[in-house]
Length: 431
Ligand SMILES: NC(=O)c1ccc[n+]([C@@H]2O[C@H](COP(=O)([O-])OP(=O)(O)OC[C@H]3O[C@@H](n4cnc5c(N)ncnc54)[C@H](O)[C@@H]3O)[C@@H](O)[C@H]2O)c1
Image (cartoon, rainbow, N blue to C red; front, side, top):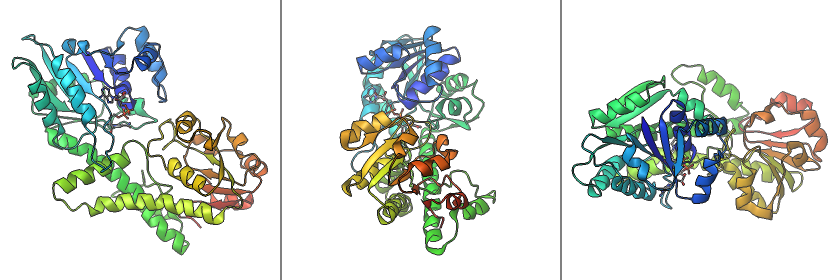
């Protein structure tokens, strides 16, 4: 098949590369010439494990092409919309990018009688948006153009985006057009996951439901951790035991410094905003957001109340491991607040240093070596659970730090080990 993907971020580029790898011809549309030139040279511009290799392989095979114009739309059987839908000030999803590209797609659709185009939205959009996309396309294209819209929400996780796409738990396809569904099912044939075929609204709501549930799991774990901290109970033991109940499960019950990233915070806020418009009481979801913010504040308070000096190192800046993404990362909040309290900070992260540098510039120090970061520091703060931190040489950490103080926002180490090594160790929900 011939496909066009509009947007080359975490979702757009991964989708394009995976479908090109299956043998399709894929055109990717961007709007920045410099970035398009970099992509043409095989630089994915973002960090995602395996992405560079799959991009370069498909460039070489001449199956993936990068464009600034929309001419490829007329040759495509499917056009994916994969542009950002960031939150507005009031939490509502900003759909201006989706609507802008819908108009451009409309103007470039094939007018041939025998050509049918599926316009499929991968961006996370509130219920009703695909209907609006359909209206925009109808308004900007002649009547005889054959097309249908379909919602195909994306569930990949940054850090494992390629394998998530290849081994999807499910592929959701929502459309009123049988033909569009058939074409999308055909495209997704090499992907094993269960195919859920449904209507547009259900498909749109499935995505928000999934992210609201994930955010709830994290906030629930944090909520219980507040009880643990007041009572001496151990959150990890509590959740291990509770998680053995198959109705509950342990996955994603992650106490810590809170959830971040480009999806959970913005999608929960967008669902709250949709709920308010529909006159639904959204206090349940508001509590999820409130607890997340409380988790960050509690962790900050731990540092402010227990530090033994103001020269600290931070390990982990990305909102989660295996990504360079720092959107809504808890690290941004913690760094900002520590700077307000006159701390001197030296930070380390495998992938996210450059992105953090764009925000904090020379207000903090950056290092590419975790051990260098902690040398002669009054303590270490851990904010992302990169695997490399799990089995560090803790004796070396102990000897490099001026004060053996660790604030661990991800519960990476055993309390007993840290005690034995002589650390002052502060984690989440464990005494
Ligand atoms: N990142 C994830 O883990 C993930 C997972 C599932 C769903 N999603 C959803 O997918 C969508 C894209 O997310 P992402 O993380 O890939 O975003 P991103 O910020 O990484 O990429 C967005 C892309 O859209 C392009 N773009 C934005 N506005 C544009 C416009 N008007 N015209 C042309 N191009 C435009 C940007 O240049 C960029 O290439 C969002 O709705 C997001 O909620 C993201």
